[in-house]
Length: 441
Image (cartoon, rainbow, N blue to C red; front, side, top):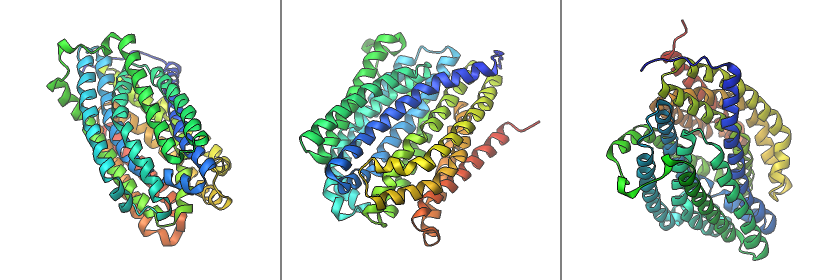
């Protein structure tokens, strides 16, 4: 590939990373907040048992969500590389091919999930006192999975174009719908976790419809014309090449999380409520890290597509500095505030204390996760998704191994240490790969 150098300044790169990542961070926060609303409302209205029931389904739901986002991570790289190179002729075909494919695949997967939901919860060692509530919640949530698949395809296309604001507005609409329906169905009508699940699915449909309408009206590249064909074999192969490795990694991670959820369930419903609620807090805390990593990946992919290797290196350097600052900030915020945030969900004092102790041991590892995501963004942006996926799987295996072998040493805090040590391994694996591909001269 021809190498170009645009001579762009460090300040310009920092500004581009911030401008691209900020809407992603805000949309991610909103998306997590409306997930919080389910737990917040049912926890405060119906009590800790309902809170644990919602939290106890998280790993199963994430199995589907991680598969979707894993594949569309590869699609976002494909879209960005095509946009950077100016080869945008296939944009509509990529969009239609994978909207149809993922929509159909995850519709079938959702139906299977609904049917096998009782067996999945039994396999997860779900405590009996929350089993029926968890089953009702899970089966309804599955109905929204196909819409999330299509939403993420359109979101990947827009990010490839450099538009990270549209997903933010889509999630904003979704959040409003979810909050209003949660209050109506749970707090007013008393439908407990069933109402919370219905509210979530309705909000997912709303944001998907919005993004499709926005994309087709705003960008000619996102207008799908039936006469041009909806399914293309060539773009299917290109998308699968970049999409399948992170999908495999995401599915393996999700399966590993099911194993870890089963491990966690063995500590009882109070610990389940504490740790799953702590992870709800953590899911927002790490969003700046994840989305800054996405920004590094997208801008790197655009530069790689344009043949500007010098700019892609500077994106990594600037992104690493920003990531270090963000990671340390998250650490200093969550250690004193984590317990207070868990208390907002209506958890008991003992449950809050378990969660507070979790954050004391866990938050110090954010810096390693941040550095891992900075390097990972660069590696994935140049298309090296296979190694990235292998590194992610290795980190997961490390986490599972430490969880089961060190529980007698650390007790419930082993959950925090296992993930933290896996992040250190992830950072080292990505650093090794970067130095291998780009040795210091």
